[in-house]
Amino acid sequence: MPVTRRDGLWFVAYFAAALLPRLSPLLSGAVFSDDLIHVPAGHLLSYRFLNYLELGFWQTVFGPAYLLGSAPQIIASFYTAALCSAIRAVLRSWAGVPRLEFSVLALLIPLHPLWNTFISWHVTGVYALSLFLIVIGYALLASRPMAGVLLIALGVSGYQVHLGLVAPLLFAELSLRKTPLVRRVLQCGAAAALYVIATKIAALAGLTTWGGRGMGLAASFHPLTNNLAVIAQPLLSFYVSVEAAWRGWSAIFAILALIAAIHRPRRWAPAPLVLPVAAAAVVLATNAPDSGPRMAAAIWIATLLAAIHSRAATIALVVFTLLALPVTLTDAENRTRGWRADQRILALLPAGAPVAIVRSSFDDPPLPPEWQSRPIVMQDFQAVTPFSYSNVHTQPEWFFGRFGHPIVPPAPGVVTIDRTTLRVISR
Image (tube, rainbow, N blue to C red; front, side, top):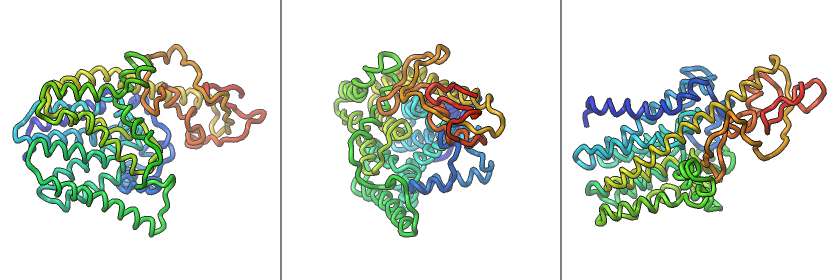
């Protein structure tokens, strides 16, 4: 399909939707957690081969401090725009005629607060590239199946849970055009098998992973429900209450299914319920105990694709996302607040001075007045605040080590920092 001027304009819109809501952490220079220490080989410990190649390439271009600069946010926004453009192009080609809702649904992808993770947490920006490769690979299965299988496998090697994107793509294709179901399932299965084979070869070659990463049965359903909850909890906590976010997070899926059933009763109305669950269920086969925004991208895209047959459901998702946009902006600002608190502490330290770290409590203290905002619940049914994004609070060893301050036990004359309150308590 030839690229038109309109395609270019939509790409620019998608890029802006990815980057502009995160200008605050971009302009402040915020970095977080793994950004401070990650090297390409670290991705191999999770069998994420795409990420190993991607980080190695950009460190060759920008230098070893690549993750500490602003380039990762620009590049992640580019990956996101490519992903949105790919979804728009694929859906339009399957339907046979351009439809505004496909363009708009794709625009909603980066506006959700969970996408802050992929733009403002530099080490995870490659996950948008992973999703893009899976979409492009799936689209190629009809004309160039071998290339499609290879691209899907490469995308899955960027983040294993993104295999969950296959289910909503399969639903969309079956809904919009005739396609051989069994062949598609076998092709997608071949892509997953190819990735598993690659991990087995890596293991035989002596590559070990931490935490049993790769593919394997999970011991709990908690990651599944936690990742599903990421879709609605930020909005509910922000506008209603934290308790509502804990108890009512599943309502958004039921409401969308009801709207789809009323508006287009002959279509597959349960899609807004089934597709997000199918996308989330992949985590049960990855042996990954983690959960949170970085694992929910495929679930959010599945939620959007479930609405392709219902203009009413599309409108409902547009309203939902516009309401979520202030949450996105607030969460982005919280990342900046956490980073600036870290910088204030760093500015108090003489160059190379050792520091001692103590924790006065395992509970976050009350937010200072300048940090007050509506609550946001976005991970493991817990509220996220500027404390959540402070490196001194979450990873002081990585933070101070990166900036040349060794960690030592508390002693007279040693600067002691309370990581709970982000305060220097002795100098």
